[in-house]
Amino acid sequence: MNERARIVENATCTFCGCVCDDITLTVENNRITRAENACSLGKAWFAEHTIEERPYALIDGREASTDEAVEVAAQLLVNARFPVIYGLSDTTCEAQREAVAIADLIGANIDTTTSVCHGPSGIAFQGVGESTATLGEIKNRADLVIYWGGNPAESHPRHFTRYTIIPKGMFVPNGRKDRTVVLVDVRRTPSARAADIFIQVKPGKDFEVLWALRALVKGHPVDPAIEEETGVSLATLQDLVERMKSCRFGVLFFGMGLTMTRGRHFNSGALLALATDLNEYTHFVAKPVRGHGNVTGADNVLSWQTGFPFAVNFSRGYPRFNPGEFTTVDLLARGEADAALIIAADPAANFPRPAIEHLRKIPVIVLDPKPTLTADLARVVFTTATYGINTGGTVYRMDDVPITLRPAFPSPYPSDKEVLRAIKERVRSLVALESIPQPVPHLLNTGTMPGAAS
Amino acid sequence: MGEKMLLIAGRSTKQGVNLNIGKHSEAYRNITTTLEMNAEDMERLGLRDGDLVRLRTAVGEAVVRCKKRKPADLPSGVLFLPYGPASSQLMDGDTAGTGMPLSKSFEVEVEPVVR
Image 1 (tube, rainbow over the protein chains, first blue to last red):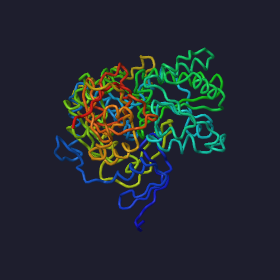
Image 2 (cartoon, rainbow over the protein chains, first blue to last red; image 1 turned 135 degrees about the vertical axis):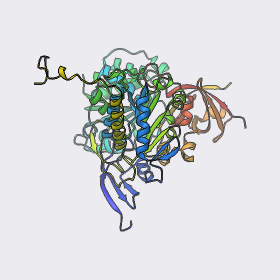
Image 3 (cartoon, rainbow over the protein chains, first blue to last red; image 1 turned 180 degrees about the vertical axis):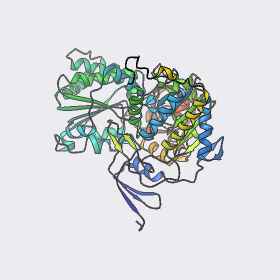
């Protein structure tokens, strides 16, 4: 370490939804050279987000200033008839608020990466409800930990060690020894090594297994032919049910194995209902394992600003929610959107081909600290500072706990919030020039309307 | 005419590390085009580690390199591919009214690429 090295204590890693806030960073010459406590994904996150020599912005591939790009972006958005705003899971809540404000101003559709992550779980929450807890509560109390349809050993490496399996807790003083860990999945992933029991389900049969478990919990008979259908024997299910009913505090963590397969929200709903059923016998909670660093914040910000967590449309001047209609994959695959503002996401790298093909046909505006495949097809590209490394702000951990960021070093590039705020202000003035109906003064403050301001 | 199998697209540690390095890096391209396949299925199809296979669905196709996994880890007829441009090429845009395309456990046709 050279003399100019700086230490940043309790820094937060925003790569995944674990949002570990116990990282000690060593910063040398505007570069993170060491990230103590971080997992392999976190180490790569900190090491690879350096200040790269990139243009502030690109317009049709030509280098431009941020201000020029703001002007073009605002014009594109205001002139679109069906603009979509998408992404938002790798930026701060403060930036997310600005994006919602833009959507409101121009009557846009706003949706986040939740729609291709736990969107189906969001639908299930509304139908079934959620028995929930924070990760701190789980760390201190859970003696039965079940992971379903996820591989945290690879996607969230510190989930086991920081929150759920390994740590000693107030009511599980021996840590790992006091907990039983179960993994349910269609393939034996590296996460199986951390589990006491691995249950392998045939692909696409999670719903059937969950529904059979619900029946067994309620004391209904289940046909042994369930094994032929699902790959899981009745004896295995009965054993799991006994463990679930007799534990003191159980938790079901669930991943994309449920939401991205046939059944989608029915799968998540079945698992949430199972957790609710188990509360007849003991304390049981269910939590989705969330992917991106602030995807949970995106759900929270959209919910508190529009009333809905994702798939929100402002085209009628008020927010409407309808997954399938206002979710981005659908809007693109059906060819409806005529402009897109993509913030901190890369749909060209993970959306279905028909959706990507439509993105190529419409003007796209991208905000990202890194070059992305979506930026390659965009008309306007902003290089922005990396949240958590270069900018402060707020992010939500996957259990809805807000965490304040401690940036490690400054960036010459503006934050997502700054760019979005500038676009918002420009959009506001352009919209005002167009034809927003102005309130008629004599109808205001007459005192004759119920609830009128006095 | 290839054989029908179920494709699971998902995350892996290497995919996560490499997307930090950059989506234009060779490492990212390599990891998102490396297909894990049941070892016995590979043997039946006359495939060895590193051989190319073509995956095809109604919407598109992708050529990827296969890598064997123990049958106990990956069942016969199931494939795993880290998320990326290759898996996107194969996914249908229909979300059945949920917003979520089928991204895991969807049917693909697998065909060895003749060298």
